[in-house]
Image (cartoon, rainbow, N blue to C red):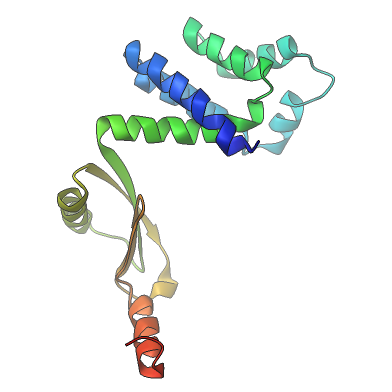
Amino acid sequence: MSLMKVARPYALAAFEVAHKAKKLSEWTDELQKAATLFEDNSTVMAILNPKLDDDQQFELLDTLFELKDKKIKNFFHLVVVNNRIEALPWIYKDFMEFRAAYEKTLDADVISAFPLSNEEEKQIAEKLEQRLHRKINIENEIDESILGGAIIYAGDLVIDGSALGRLKQLDKTLKGDQL
């Protein structure tokens, strides 16, 4: 079974416990730290060392994160005992999706050739909020290769308003690929 499939029930359980305890922020922080851990290969190799038993792996995680909340500790212990440490990045991702659905928020990636002004970000967020009925958080990424305009990714929605995208569409139309 893939790590992505394994992660979902863990993320849901974590979300339900965090929500019930009114500790979404605390759980988010701890899961984010765990997901970030997997960006450093040496740390991953140390935790996944086959010479370590479950208790030693958990102690290492506990030391790295300085876990204080008993329920969070129990969650991480369960992840270790069930050999799901490698699923932590996906658990965090799914947890954040559950949180966003609950809070009716959505992160939108806006790729533009130049940095967006605060006013432009605000206008894009307002339009997306009207369309998607959610609070939108804009993350602006710069990619000069799109020449101008912007490409917006918000959940399953993709809007390509880039100059490069329009030129490609025009090229297709002129070649008769699309009528």
